[in-house]
Amino acid sequence: MKRIAFGIEYDGTDFLGWQSQPQEPTVQDTVSAALAFVADRPVSLVCSGRTDTGVHARCQVVHCDLPRECKRSERAWVLGTNSRLPSTVALRWAREVTGEFHARFSARTRRYRYRIVNRPVRLGLDARFASWERLPLDTARMQQACEALRGTHDFSSFRTSACQARSPVRTVESIQWSRDGERIELLIQANGFLHHMVRNIVGSALCVGRGEQPPSWIADLLARKDRTCAGPTAAATGLEFLGARYPPHFALPPEVTLEVAS
Image (cartoon, rainbow, N blue to C red):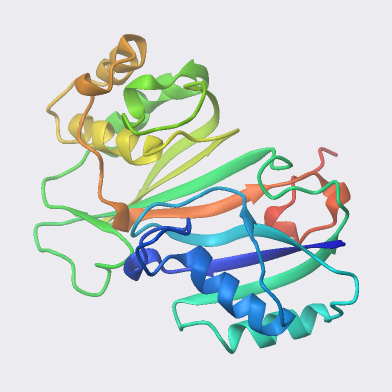
């Protein structure tokens, strides 16, 4: 058998998340069917991180194992698969990798972006890719509050009750709020994320940004380890999985490869 890794981007608006399930459509089933057409056999995919209903991905990394006799060039994988995918999903690249590579377990870090349009009027053009907040937001307060989340913590206050992770402990490596006019973004990177973790952090940060809670509230929530004390879950529309990053020896594209310190 040989192992092939793929990078996929998708607009999650019309999908019931990544993971295959009886209800349709899911991104996994859609991509698997397209790849199976090119491979001329069933394809079973393993992903770097599952996304929920309505959540987008800039570069979801997946892998599959296929018989050696299934010979396709990287270009053939990309062009052939994209010919069978809807306009909202695209295969970005394909790479043959060693059996040591695993899309989920080889990942060293994962990154998300959350977009908000902060204005009095609801969204038109941006409605699929950003959430809307009509009340003024103070991003400096939001940044101050979220500094408490850096480092290794128990994030029980920011995970859904349906989360199946064995441990609520994660390490947030960076978290940054920024603003450009009416557009606000959160960039967050961690060794892993719990179910709804980013959206629950955003929902609580919005309470601080609107002035409903002090910046110290986020640290208090973290210490309480109780989801019922935190803010509401932010809308899925604003969330984009930027992707995982892997050690350089796997020779994947730069966008999913860890930078080596000089």
